[in-house]
Image 1: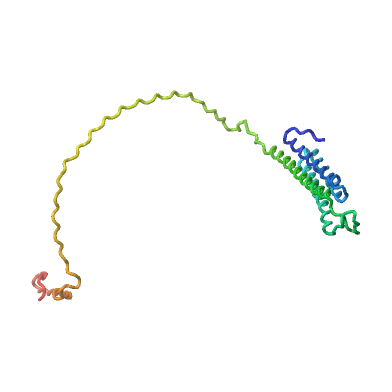
Image 2: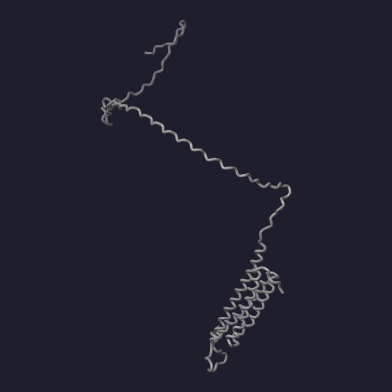
Length: 257
């Protein structure tokens, strides 16, 4: 037997698994109570197995998450198998055909159509089975969250200073200083007299601009006046005469004729 849960989270997990077990039991007895025939009885055994597995989850979930997960997986498979077993009945009737309702005789290999009670039992059992799967899944998620919250707690803080480090002294709180007195208002400065503007000086008259000379238009120049420039003459080489042997040599300043 499992120990009684201590925290509200564990109580939530326990009652969720027991509720899923009760829903599986209701889904198992619904075809027999509302159906009134043995055609939907193939889902009773799978639903009963699912109820036993969910009850085991409620008793053994404290042994570890792998056990609770395995039992929930087996219960879900059993419920799905029971739902498929009930759904196969109307599919078989639709494929093979049905005979006329009683008291008409029924041929060989044919079955009577579904009654209103069987149709109600079919839909109710399928809905309760799906609800049992979802309820068990909610309990499993709550169980995993409990372990995650326990692991991801705040890390322990170190209270002892490490070796080689000096403890930091606590900052001393200085006494509150008295507020300084408010500054005295300064006297308002007297308005300065406005400077006097200098007297108006009469404007000086500017001299008249000189007349501008008009240049002749391009192409109106007299061709006689505009003589072509003379070609530049090449300078002649000056020859220096040889001085007589007796007289001293003096540079000649006159140009040759």
